[in-house]
Amino acid sequence: MAVLGEREAHLSGVQRLALVDAAAWWLSEPNGGQELAYALLAASCATEVTTEHVYLTLITPSNQLNDDSEAPSS
Image (cartoon, one colour):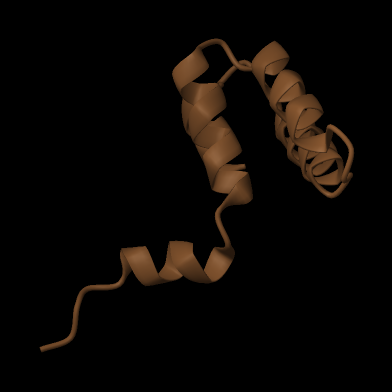
């Protein structure tokens, strides 16, 4: 939702929530779900770059996102 908030100002908070929820639901479907999730995002996002960014954020495990943002320990 943060990515959509930054890049798709025309979408309301409820619209961003609905979009992320629907795309996440499609991603859980085994037969063609990834393609349908991507299509939904592409239809809602103004640019392909934003579509890619949102899609990759959705499919990246949350623990990997947290690991990437932490500074390496010395």
